[in-house]
Length: 505
Image 1 (tube, rainbow, N blue to C red):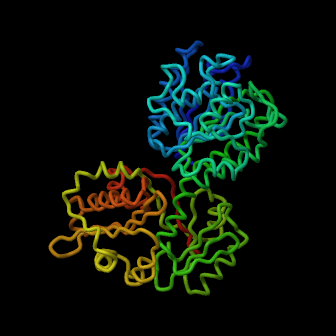
Image 2: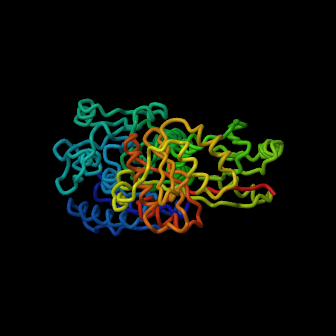
Image 3: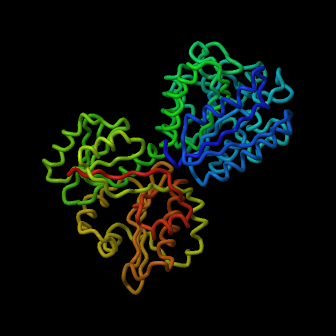
């Protein structure tokens, strides 16, 4: 587990109808113990029952989430009611671009008037949709089209009628799940552990026959994480009853969390590779081998491993680059610790620690508005922009990059530059692709730094990206570039993941 994950433990029991609901407190702790993290927060839930306790718990959970400092948050219950604030926070952040995938044996779509049990954990999703106890309904309710039920098999009549009337789909396989989520920008993944088949997992209070196997659940969560940005993850309703169930979770839970944690990489990396095309890109046993003659930059001449690593092919990778008289460089990214260790033992040195930062386009537009007085040219076109690139870029291969990379970028490209006294003062390159836009080649003439040039370029690029339908931005910055970090953080960017290169001896 990475240190930039926040675990929020919420041992709430008051929303459950289970006669053994007291076990939820131990369940939350045991789930938390499976996931060491840089930050762990245990919410001090109310010690009394009743609706007021749920409202108190929700407020405390919200406060805990606000202290997560942009880290990926995993919320651990407790009953399903602990998901009120995490999902409400995701809805505030992503708006209509969010989908909620509700893994559960039950729909949790009852209202106080329709619920057979009167227990809140059977009303949580309906409350998030705007129909629930007045003091628990979020300020921005979800819309039914934002919800997908996964593995649900035990609906009360009123829940079945509501789902049918509103068109909320139910799916049980990875392919159908991705299709049902559709064109959402991000998903929140809720998991009630009773979604699992009680034939293999019994430590829940309200089991239902049938259900998903652990492998199927992991496959569905992984399919989501590979296609969408995961806005948050909640795991609930664990009532520990058997040691073998804890053993099952010890394998399952970290795997699901890891898949969700690195979801942004799965969304951004293919776009980043397309935005900076290699002269040639060959596939070999799941690896992508990039090679661009004449260009010396790592991103143009490096191997990208598959998600599972692939140690057995290293000899072939080395032969590929040495035959082309290039250093053997491997980009080691999200979740590839085993590969990184293997390369380290093989003598590969570590270079260029890089962070990928992301932001919402409208937030960058707002935070950079103060620099709109600096005129930015976004209509220069590639030829004039490349002249600025040649003067401002500090690499020796600018001509080759212009010919073999910049001129071959597909799709929508924004060439941003600032001129002062007839000379280039700053530049940036923006590439839009299916809801995202990447910022590349940001540079400012050294003597003009801290005068708003970089901020103005970033703001102009964000406004251009918004015009191309890109509501998210990404960029890459090396870990030791303090000036760039300040610029991007002030503009609203936060770190999503990191990678580095391993270079053969």
